[in-house]
Amino acid sequence: MPFKPVEHPKCPKCGKSVYAAEERVAGGLKWHKMCFKCGLCSKLLDSTNCSEHEGELFCKVCHARKYGPKGYGFGGGAGCLSMDTGSHLGGEGAN
Image 1 (cartoon, rainbow, N blue to C red):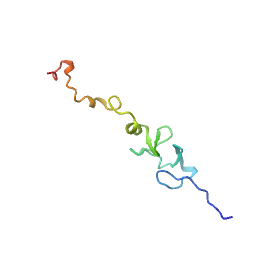
Image 2: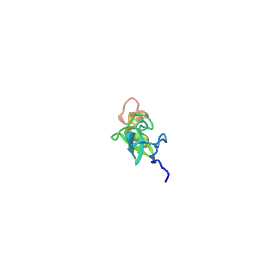
Image 3: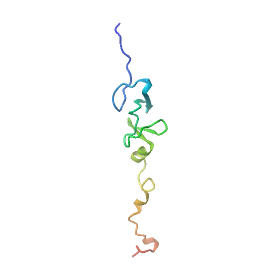
C-alpha cells in the first residue's frame, strides 16, 4: 500500500495548506494567522472582532459599513442634512 500524505485544508485567502499550529477558524473555513485579516482595512482579526461574508473576512466596522443598513441614521451623519436651508425654523435661510 503506497503512502498517502494527509490532506490539509487550504486557506481561502492564499490557497496554501493550513496546519493546526497556525490555523484560525471563521465561517467554517480555516485560515492562516497572517491571512486572517479584514478584506477592506487589512486589520488583523481575532474571534471577537471578525465577521465573515461569502468567504471573505471583515472587521465588525468594515462589515457594517459595506453590508449594514444605509440611509439617514445609519452612519450618514449631519452631512445628510446639508441641503436643509432652515426655512422651517424661520431663520436666515427662510424665504
